[in-house]
Length: 101
Image 1: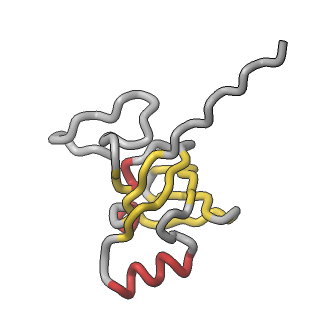
Image 2: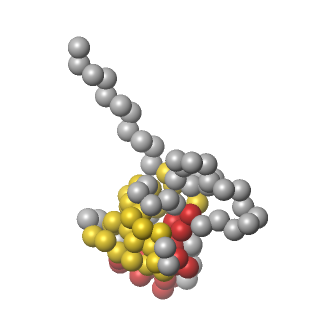
Image 3: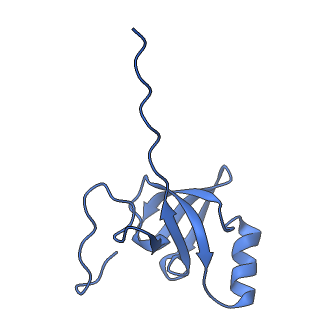
């Protein structure tokens, strides 16, 4: 979700910025890696207990009022406000395998 001040994300990009972005800015269907948790010690501890740990790969399934993610083979819903405190990076798409001849 971008505000009027921010440039829109390029089509097909996971994050509007090339490096880190908050989880609420990621498009549904995209896999990302958590790089940083922002917030109080209590908040970050609770996120880690839920599986939102640094270096954890997650997939954003839905981005509406709430954010639905696949984390450790479980679907978890968090508020978009909470998703703003989770900084992620895009996981590069795997290279296509050459077809055997």
